[in-house]
Length: 325
Image 1: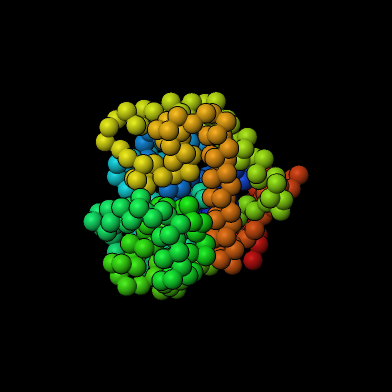
Image 2: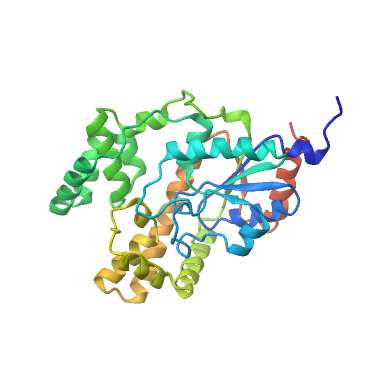
């Protein structure tokens, strides 16, 4: 049997690129696409939704034309998308891409998706509208901080990683507790491999992680300013004008969209939206880094090094071509 060429070998194993928001994942993915025959699978819970373009930093049409992208614009914002659905879709796509002799390049910042894909995810109870409505009513009466305190009593591990203002995840954690009698953290902690999931060492996961948090905070502020200049408020106004969407939907709870929706509802000045949007994005990045520290199989790369991009490209190419054990 003939030995496969480097290019052929590169198409045999998926590659993952994770990292906090604004750490340079997209630039690295596009740089790799110039050197390897890749197709990109988005690992991002916001990019799946149509109409959420500016605030999700969705790849441009030109970028998607240059490199095949998957799991982008596959859902209407009114239709939630779950981690289990991601595992199913990504597993199918990886097989299809590899069958074409190309490399599946999984890129994004939704760490639960990466963990579910590599470790598996127990079957959690689906969303229950009645339970969610009850939790929202209690939050209106007592505040999300009170529900966060309740979560700390029944699921301290989840409460420890969620800030008191993260209403979406607090609600989901309490919902899972009420429906299953099990803390959400017990589902995440399982090491059993679910159907369609892959063993941790089956393919490498690289992680762009800045050594200087201030570097990341500057990039977050600059990117949120760019989103505002590009028309984020107009994009959210169009979503509100549809009349069938609410800020309780997962799509509209995404960082940036949640704050822009509130700004339009409450008449915030632009400066307040800028401050709150950037602050919420910093909190998101902190949570993403916390997730990554809980994934010891990842291969961290210094996102803020002067030569971060060429160094990361060189290392990933060497790994893809089998030059690193």
